[in-house]
Length: 390
Image 1 (cartoon, rainbow, N blue to C red):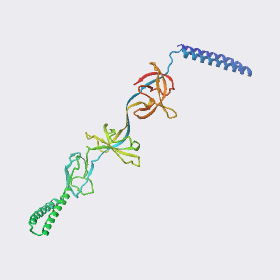
Image 2 (cartoon, rainbow, N blue to C red):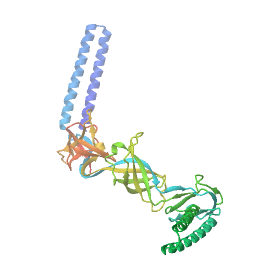
Image 3 (tube, rainbow, N blue to C red):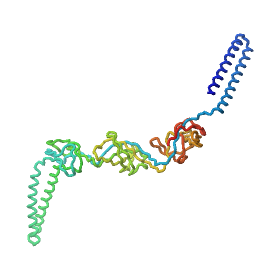
Image 4 (cartoon, one colour):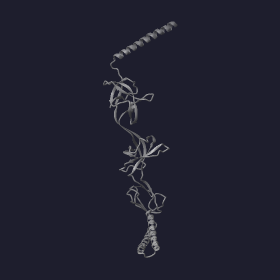
């Protein structure tokens, strides 16, 4: 209140002086006397200097007597030691090593398809058959010929052991049997190609060729077969992370299309740097118990590339930087419960993550530093603590 009255008094004084000087100046100007006008100018300037001196003295006195002086308000942060983790954010896609197109190995009509799209099948289960075009009948004839040749050989072998018959007869019979046996095996192999079986356990993703169509090797695939049990995410990592991303590194996998996040680990790290984009490949195991994760699904990866126990970390908005690129914070000293002195302290920093910065030098545990309000502070300035952020 006193300060307000003082200001009104000063304003009134300045106004009265200005009014008085204004009338005097008008009279001098009307006289047209150059000497009087210069003299009047000197008087006016002197009166303003006097007022300036009075204002300065009053301001000093007010500052000394005013017990309600306010300092800059700041919030604080107590430096703590904690486990600090740094992550690389990258995008990848889901793949599976068991995702194949099944092609025919024999030419003929696709006579039977035993499965449907989306059906789960086991390894070795029959999926389809191709008409063998009479191979079964040929095989039956060859097997009969083989049995005759085998019987003839067994009899001749017994005679040969008794030193009956010539050696050439024995060798001819043996050769006939082995030839018939080979022919049977070859035809069985050919006939086996008419039966299509599951190479591993999985799911029929798509039936491409319908029953009744003619198929042949190298032409259209019959079906797509996928195993969703052994899936992984493949991603390309910049080469500057080659030392920090290793086998076993923890990974958080997020699938935006599913709104789902799972934990995994790096299972393989590529040994080749792609010269076109300077990256290397990694693979991360993907658990898919519910079957919702599909091949080619987009995944966002957060790879843990750095961990330090008992690290000192502070919010990044506590840290300032000068023209030389040196980083510093304001450490609070002589705290009296309300006010404290802000001391500019240079620090060394490490990695940052999610708005927090690792401090590797210049600070110790449990010191209080300025958080909000540090931008306009000067070294050694007294500040008022608004609240303390722990």
